[in-house]
Length: 389
Image 1 (cartoon, rainbow, N blue to C red):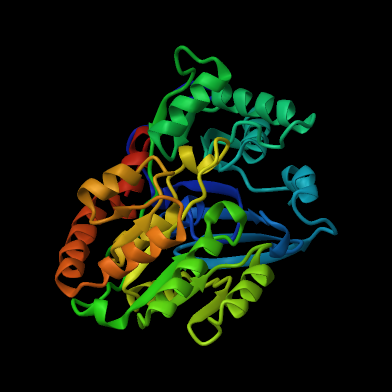
Image 2 (spheres, one colour; image 1 turned 30 degrees about the vertical axis):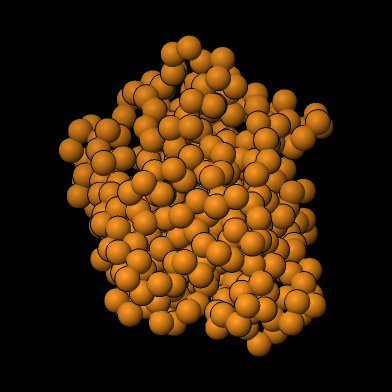
């Protein structure tokens, strides 16, 4: 590994090691999965979660774990909401314990880790990128500053992890890397397969469509509502669950009401308990991901977590061909690709509810999901860093 310190000696047990996990966002993702994996194996972990979007408020949550349990949790309120709060994230909290490995899930978090390594407060630092966005802050001075810090982290961290090969290649091109300066791994989004409930073999009979994710224009939830309205007008008895919050929440509720879907579509808002999300998914029949095509969409480089949650629940997926994994899901995991069109989406949902086809697609989704067990993915990711157990 490249950096000011060598990696932890091969064979270091997680139970005898300490870790910092610094990320933005409170939803289930790689940072939360890594936290759970390390704490379950007795690692000493300090997890710092900063708000990612405005609706997540002003609290920065710092939680310390030892022997598999929480030993201290504190919430630090900063009178700023994202994106303004990003400027203070590297200073909250002011002090963190010395750790063997620091995982920064964005350039600001990794940058603080690099400073900690220089001060001998972190033995090694890993940049774990959860997305790639060309032009992160648009045509503002913040974008070149962000890019400069991202490139620095890609060059100075001891290791770099990307969610997809597409993101890895795009970031290399963006930063002009002909050879990657540090060891780089692709670790896709995963799921806790041992704990996740799955849709029953007669799950098509529920006739429920589910969407999980942030309520923003690029996610295409308005298209889903238009498709549900078309099915309703056809006399097709289909209902829907929308799980997630976001700036479009009120607008989407109003759209659903205007389409006469108040009794058909349930908006659950942001659900903090991921096990409750898993229960809702297992009670559905079809999962949708109607991403809006756009040339600057970061979903084109991403590995969306919702898709792995859908697969783990055994749900047939209907999605647009935006994420890199889309064509592979269609070929191997029982998914169907559709254009960004409400009629096409409605037709695909209706086709997906055929019981015979549904059971075949459910089996394909569950089989494909075996590739993405967090227990396996995280074990493989930590081994090159010198941790086991």
